[in-house]
Length: 211
Length: 211
DNA sequence: TAGATTGTTAATCGATTAACAATC
DNA sequence: TAGATTGTTAATCGATTAACAATC
Image 1 (tube, rainbow over the protein chains, first blue to last red):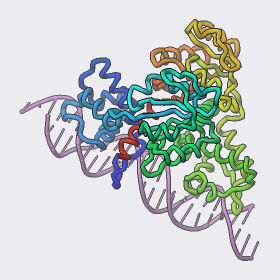
Image 2: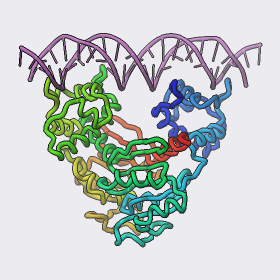
Image 3: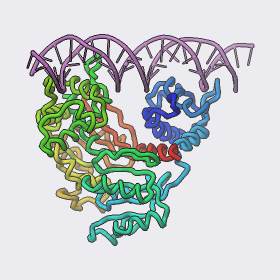
Image 4: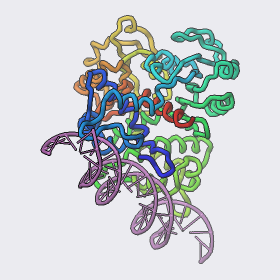
């Protein structure tokens, strides 16, 4: 659903990766075409919603036929910007930072992983996957010299907000934040907060309600 | 917002952990009372929405005064079920499983971490924080003998769905799922899916749109 | 051409915001 | 009592669903 001002509802945006995943699976199973009705059965969204969502970005289907799986997959990839890679760093080489550095799935699109940083001298110099943990003192120089645009924040809560300020200052344009603070978007800088604790508390709520 | 059937909108539910966090901070700063207007400034939600949200669960405030921070914090904790601990296991002792095992913040409420499992014999027997990785073959016995109710799935995608079936069979009542599959809720079993890839793709979308 | 299914407009439903009477 | 702020109802806004004409 596109709003009057041209902006797109976050509800729609958060469904896009789901479409992407389902279409990818369909593609892998060599499905060539799919109707909104069939997609509805797979995704659990209504056919009507699917057509509305897709038409936010353009008419990707053919009347009387449906959607070409390959073409639709490519189009959604492009809408998501997954055809572009961004030079990225991880800040904070604790367990979570290391987990992200090691998960190859995240590098399939979007992330072009260039480095990982920490302040702890016991950690600096250690190998994490294909990278060596660098001293956070050199982060400014590294961002500037390598035109890094994305930072993944895996630091403790206490330092995350200040760190984000600095990173933006150094030229970072997108932050994937795992520290439990809500970093606020600002002009030209995109922010995606992942709050694992909040997610856990929702599970707690659901279980509490279920008994 | 409570619906006619008594169920509560997930929009409201997902705001509850945020209230919890802000109130916790206020409590830590020794703030005693707060009005919906002040809370609005802190949270970014409208005062009206805050009052609506809270009144879904009961009248926690006092007219002319506002809300007692301590009392409200306790009430939201209780609504979230954070006063109850659930015996929990992690399934999959890869990087992510280890990261979760090591993050003490998750054990502050709700999770009573009892064990971690893997199928890989190179990993079984290793120490992860205060636990030793156990063989997944013994998972059924362990769940039954220890009355485990929560499982955290940190396995690869390919095995997650089947694993979830088994876990539910063995008596698990809540699943915190990090594998990139959407596990569906069923009666008596609560499921919270964390899709990190989806989150990353949303960041990609936002950056793509921003340029 | 007839059948199918989209794109799109209209109707409905739900969530948020505004307003204000109740009351501390 | 007067002032403040809740709880709650009403109004608005936005998102989802339904319907159907356009068209492949």
